[in-house]
Image: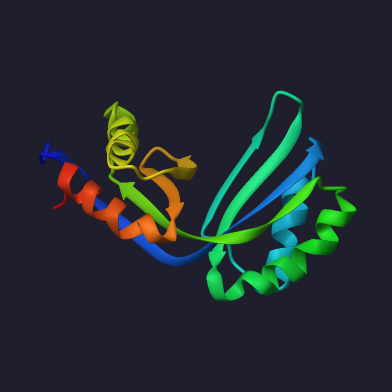
Length: 159
């Protein structure tokens, strides 16, 4: 893959994470608050959060935590999942988080497509995505994190 020279502010690669998920059932106010209040009360932090509501009006949330906190996170969330009548609490596969950032992404279309296309071309599967006006983040299997980082460095130019 040749270097395309797309300038960005930087790339962050976080290792040693676990991806936890809750399928919470029918969407209603307070589901996400209950999840992250429970984590906060247990002194636990999420490094990546993505939430969506599907066509059946069910809420789904996925987030990354430090892998060493996985059991504590699950312990804190089991009662919450039960109270919310969640359909499922996923147990936390080991993942890496890659984030591309820059100050002017909202004026530069195509950065997300280039990043995701690059990972697809090299066989890296994306498990979750979250974006903002200045960051494109994706979660990949932990054993694909280094390969993904290398490929992104080939496409994006850092300062």
